[in-house]
Structure formats: C-alpha cells, structure tokens
Length: 148
Ligand SMILES: CCCCCCCC(=O)SCCNC(=O)CCNC(=O)[C@H](O)C(C)(C)COP(=O)(O)OP(=O)(O)OC[C@H]1O[C@@H](n2cnc3c(N)ncnc32)[C@H](O)[C@@H]1OP(=O)(O)O
Image (cartoon, rainbow, N blue to C red; front, side):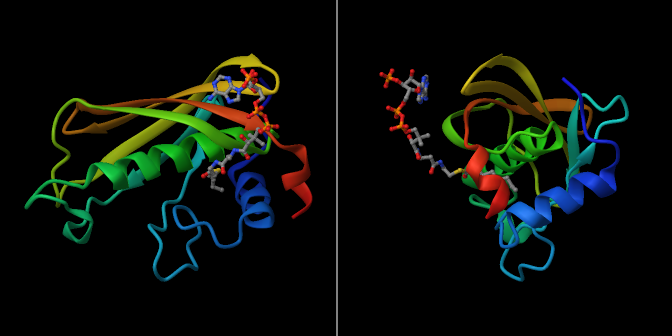
C-alpha cells in the first residue's frame, strides 16, 4: 500500500475532499479539529486527541460516541492517505477501559485488507501507555468522491 508523499499532501487531499468534516477540519468551529498525519513509517495515520472535558459523557470519561467518531475519521483519513476515497459501511468499537478527560490520547489507524470495493481497517486509542479502545471498520470505495 503506497502512501502519499508527505503530511502536507495528505492534508491537501483531505481539504479538497472534505472541507467541512466534523472530525478533522480545523476550520469547523463546532468540530473535533483532529489533525491526522502519516505515521513515521507511512503505513497509517495517527493523531493526538486532547480529551478535553467538553467531550465527556459521564463525569471524567470521554463519551464513547466521540471516540467512535475519532476512529471513523482516522480510518477515513487513512484511506485518503493511501489514495482511496470511500464511505464507512461498518464500524465496530471495543471500549476496553474508560478514556479519561484531561489527558492526551493517541489514535492510530491502518488498512489491514483490501477486497475491492471493500477495505478493512483497524484503529486503536492509547492513553497512559494503555490501549483503551480499538475499532474495526469496512470502507466502501467511492472514487467519485474525489472530485466533490
Ligand atoms: C475526511 C475525514 C474522513 C471522513 C470519514 C467519514 C466516513 C463517513 O462517515 S461516510 C458516511 C457514512 N456512510 C455512508 O453514508 C454510507 C451509506 N451507504 C451507502 O451509500 C451504500 O450502502 C453504498 C454506496 C456504500 C453501497 O450501496 P450499493 O451500491 O447499493 O451496494 P450494496 O447493495 O449496499 O452493497 C453491495 C455489496 O457490497 C458489500 N457490502 C456492502 N456493505 C458491506 C458490509 N458492511 N460488510 C460486508 N459487505 C458489504 C456486499 O457484498 C454487498 O452486497 P450484498 O448486500 O448482496 O451482500
């Protein structure tokens, strides 16, 4: 799987495709403003989430729906980083431990299998050196999204 050349190229590609994305567009004042970049080896994407308390469900714990959204964004950006535009058709999240507010977490996603038009991806969230949540998703290739 060949990644795009640089983080800059990834960001430009994403901006072109999804100018209003609620998860990753930094200009959306109501969005999560997550900044996904390529992993060092270029095999996936990664981002830091600040776990601000405005995203909590129960006191002190990040809402699971927010975590699922961040996973979805990570895997969508991973698709773009590898030159594929697609929609999510299935997303499963395993919440292993509470993600606490006030401590940064790192999210990473990668493509694990390609069976066109379906792509399988996995993602994980690490906080305090512990894997606190994982996700699997299927994305369905939609080349026409490239030009929107
Ligand atoms: C920039 C930031 C990143 C952004 C990432 C954001 C990602 C998103 O939120 S996308 C929005 C959410 N997703 C959507 O809106 C998708 C909605 N779904 C669709 O539009 C349609 O289902 C679409 C176009 C994908 C496919 O529709 P259609 O062409 O009718 O195909 P459909 O008959 O449903 O499926 C075709 C085949 O694909 C396969 N398939 C589809 N979905 C699945 C699935 N979840 N699992 C396994 N196989 C599947 C099956 O083989 C299926 O055939 P069958 O149903 O006979 O088994």
